[in-house]
Amino acid sequence: MTDESTEGPPGAEETTAPEGSEAGEGVVDDGRRAQRGTTVLLLGGGENGRDLVIAFQHLGATVVAADTYADAPGHSVADVSAVVELTDPEQLAAFIRDTQADYVVTATDAVAADALAAAADGELADVVPSARSARLSLDREGLRRLAADDLGLPTVPFWFAGSAEELTAIADHAGFPLVVKPLVALPGEGQSVLLRPDDVEPAWDRAVSAGGRFTHNRVLAETVVEIDYELTLLTVRTGDAPGILYFCEPIGHRQVDGFSGELVLEAWQPQPMGDAALDAAKSIAARVVNALGGRGVFAVELLVRGDEVYFSDVSARPADSSVVTLRSQRLNVYELHARAVLGLPVDTIMISPAAAELVYGTSTTAVTGAGLIDGLAAALQVPESDARLYRRSPGYPVLSRRRLGLGLSTGPDVTTARDRVRQVSTALRRLWHE
Image (cartoon, rainbow, N blue to C red):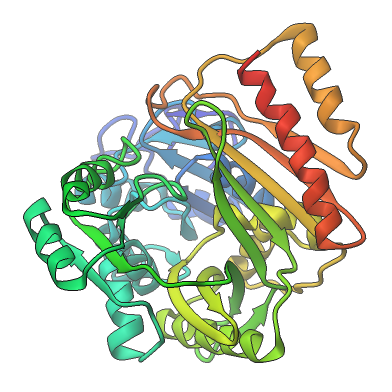
């Protein structure tokens, strides 16, 4: 781990360990902790983590970013960076204790929830949104059962399988078609639609191996239902008990196949919908977010057919579809999350219809030099457009799908914004294929 400033929080190699501790542990005394101001320990240094680091720093916080591999995107902007096996309960618990941060915030699915609970129970830090929220939002099976069984929220029929044989039995019972999803993966990664018995084993293998960095030996199977669209309803919860909820305008999204195995996540805000469906969406979001508790941004995933709304998932942190708020809202999703975590005022004002396209892939090469500038020029000549390119960190698994690029556009209406962002994204995707 590296410390990029001599006055940073504990956790840096340069920190002098107190007597009786291992050299380099990064433990500091209470006097230094009182002097350093607010410190946030961010678990997960990916691209979302990078934007969260900046949002917290803009509010005066010192940020320690930790991830399982070196040179994660968040490491480059954090005050202190560290390589920690986040899924190891003992290692993570020790790191949280030694860092002595005021707040512990998760920005990844791959975190040992037991370590977060231990930190909260021992009052070592304020675990945000809460240890319960973190545990359930990382436990897709427990979360779905909470929504369907405890809260009685409408969901599509679902099952969980722990082997290809169990998945075969579910398919025999439920019939075809059937959607199979991994418990943890990038949007759309590892998903399959089963149409016949021969599809079961390949779908199982694809789901349990999705992501490369995550290991799960259980999958989610859902009945296929006809829907009009999927949406993310960003719900901001401030305070603890009782919390106050703020809703962003609904974000529509869909996944499409790109070039050479790439995946494109298209998102737009606002998603047009009727009053009855919007009221139902807010009611579902409020019930599940209040059940999870804590504070911060919750990305509630919903399926909509007419006025019928089904609960699908919730993440207690910014979701990839919420990148559209970088241009659509006065406060983007990262700023909202940072404010809510620190207990600061928020607002969810949308300033313009907008659209975004995130491109995921495994490419390790891209056009450079004049070719890069020409490609960016083609993308940015689209009115009201913006673009981001993402570099692969040296420690990131080579064959794992990751973000390659992001196109953003605004417009007088959603249709125009979506048309514009498609042009931006098409120009960016050529950078990996020319």
